[in-house]
Amino acid sequence: MKKEFVVIGLGRFGGSIVTELVELGAEVMAIDISSDRVEEYAQIATTAVTADTTDESALRSLGIRNFEHVVVAIGENIQASILTTLILKEVGVKHISVKAQNDYHEKVLRKIGADQVVHPERDMAKRIANNMVSNNILDY
Ligand code: ATP
View 1 (tube, protein in one colour):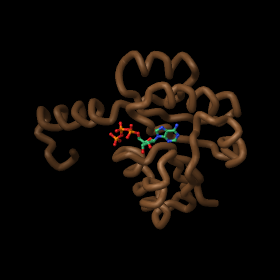
View 2: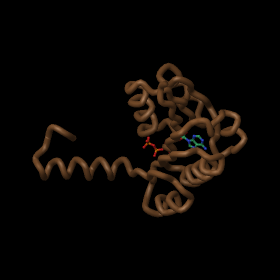
View 3: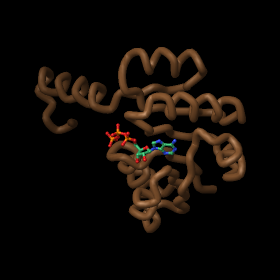
View 4: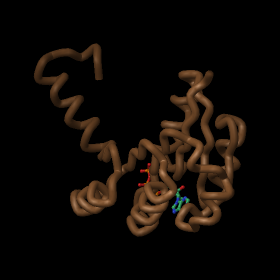
């Protein structure tokens, strides 16, 4: 059976996650509040849906709790990111990964039960710097 994921927020990070997951053979539901963004991923994702994920009933009607792993890639709107994560937790999604904007954001996300918190730019910079120091230019 194919692995199924949901990605919420189709900015540069969320959009790249969608593309990579599909390349790896997964089924992906892509969600964004912006119909333009959703349109961009309609041909790439398995399903692409326009929805405000701070609206609990909208999330429930998409059957979100049937997915084991949801990625929240809403960046700038920290309030929307937190509220979305809280709802996902409440409906019982097993694994929630969230992109954090800063340390305060991360602290709140961890408190409400996010399983994985990522800082894409910071994490990638760390990895590249480590590889530079160890002269391992092959694995950026
Ligand atoms: P990146 O750096 O990855 O491009 P970003 O940090 O600039 O991302 P934003 O562009 O603020 O992040 O958010 C990513 C996406 O999340 C946007 O496409 C935005 O429309 C979407 N988004 C924001 N609020 C909501 C919401 N309430 N429900 C669903 N999607 C949302």
